[in-house]
Amino acid sequence: MGGIPTIYEFLAYLDFLRGTPAAILVLLTASLILILPDWRWLLLALILQYLVVGLLFADVLPPHLAFMKVLVGAFICLILYITARQVNFGRLPEDVTEEEVGQLEEERLVQIGPYSLPIELLFRVFLALIVILTIWAVSQSTGFLLTEVPEHVNLAILSLTGMGLVTFSLTGEPLKAGMGLLTFMTGFELFYHAIEHSIAMLVVLSIADLIIALSIAYLMQARHSFLAFLD
Image (cartoon, rainbow, N blue to C red; front, top):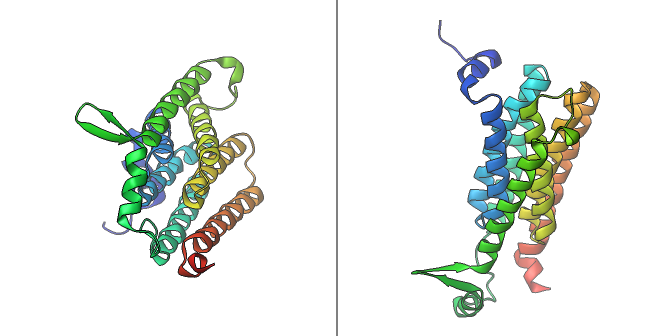
């Protein structure tokens, strides 16, 4: 019979991604959030991250509660997307010309063969590689892992918290820093729910995520709205 698939059917469809593949995908999405400069790609990486993390939550929580975490993540991404569109995020302010931006970009580019790449982008790629190697090394050391938590969940927790903290600490831009904080929070929540199955705390942490998303939206409005440029 046709109809809307159940949560259990969705999990069955995505069974090939569960376990270590999901943990590696989370490491990849968290790295992309650290590296990528464009807000559209950042949001795409964040959406994918919440979807994949839903599979990991399903390993430590009942499926219907894991699905709730995915819904909260989708709502967070919707808040950030609407705010970015409202403030014309990624576009130049009216008081900044293309020539001025061009001069700044020329000072920050490095020539690698036929390509000119931003120094900041190269730095972020290099830093992401270092963090990935560190996370992988720590995940192979039993002294740093939770013995009662599956190995792939440990890897995902390290990836989300590590990459999230690095992303948050490297930028003053509300959107990117906020995504770093949300990534860290996702890792903390995965850690908490892996050792404690509390519905009350799940609700509290989900509300905290939404408050963070609204705070990011407010800071984006304050920094990028037309009225802010008039001050």
